[in-house]
Image (cartoon, rainbow, N blue to C red; front, side, top):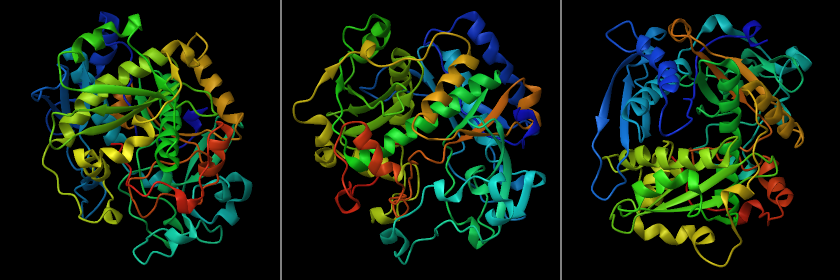
Length: 454
């Protein structure tokens, strides 16, 4: 069905086992076709050195150029378009970094031929319901430095055709929710800040969609946990046999992993983690989170991705002095990672709480990606959330046998790195904690600290 919908670019790398089999690597090696000199989207990969006291994971970064030069007279020189990959197998880690870089490329490659100018009122029920989209609160909108507006069906904007996996029909969604680095060209487009949530790439279209849906659920949990300061049950991973390799790698370092069950009312296994490093005078704590169909694999993914995130956050970066001016994926993580801000995490690190093991978390039914995708769509439908997908596969990705998608679930709580625009009027922010059996705080009692996830 997606072939009939708009095509473009965007992605999310596929992760499975830490120890890659030859079949795993054979599938990933098709990515070599997108790496090379000018004319290929990924320039190359670099192995990053492990920092003192850090777990011994192989971490690679793959880079692309400035894709905005392909369609703009004034290239944006966007940042954050490198792809990172970490793991116990060096070759697999490198190829994962290439996949993530290609994902960044595809979700940045604006294709104007896919765009239609119209108002939501003109499109009628062929368009996503603007009332379902996240929105900023009156307090946020009244900020003189705020850029966003409340969605307005009478204002023209660009639309891209997607496919509703929930309703089995085409649906138009705002271009602001599809691509990165596309400047708002009309007042009506100032309804969202671009972010990569829901982007995924894989050789199997259904698996790409599974990965994209899981990321949308993950980002929902990240926002809910931090803004509402949810007091989650802790997960004891010490007795999990499938995590022995991860335990071996981290036990000799100076990093402690605390895992929490952040599975929401959607019912898809989600793990939130606070990674502590008391020896480090710049990065005392780091937040990670992952969602997937298998709880043990979700935790393995956190171990892998934490390795590359810790390297990125300890590199030199410029951070605004006022958290209200934070706009980058790294700003809040660097600011909140300072050891002296450990107290902001007391709602997770302190107090008595229930303890669980990975086997207590739900898991998807066994079977091929098609079955898991159907299960995910059903889980979201149970909380009245619609899954919309747009195919963003570029020619380069298609020639390498890969499919790139963007998944949008309007009813879920979005993650935002722009502190002035945290979408504090979205109903999900206040209803989800109640559905989870937890306390829901009103806007004036929400967490004032910037988002620490990166």
